[in-house]
Amino acid sequence: QVQLVESGGGLVQAGGSLRLSCAASGSGFSIRAMAWYRQAPGKQRELVCVITSGGSTNYGDSVKGRFTISRDKNTVLLQMNSLKPEDTAVYYCNAEVALGGFVYPYWGQGTQVTVSA
Image 1: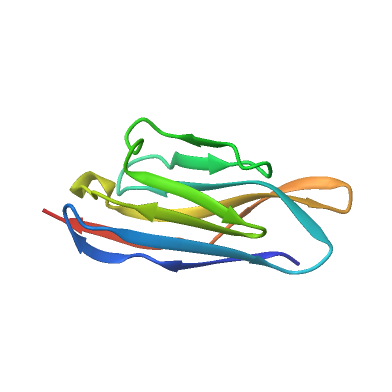
Image 2: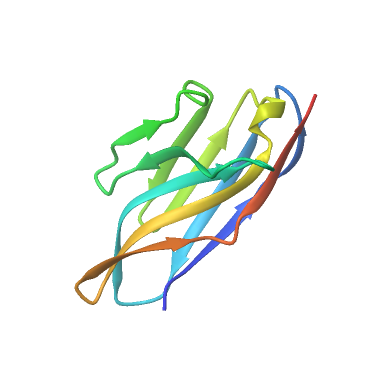
């Protein structure tokens, strides 16, 4: 069984910074891409950024230049700078897990990020 455990998040004033972490645990698996999604109240879940197993990254337009995704083996970090109230959402870690010859999407439990004006 594979688990993604998130940490970080919380309440910060606009212009501040937060860092999220997501660690995958288990055995017999490998991870391809890892990503962060977010979902604000009343809105659909959206992709924030993604990092491949080779280290290539891609960011949503709303976070480019402010957020940085990085990865160390099975742990992915999201450094969020210059936060804005519109960044307020539940942030979810996602991983493409290769297990038993198949690839499955796994999700973290979500962590709340609240940015006050």
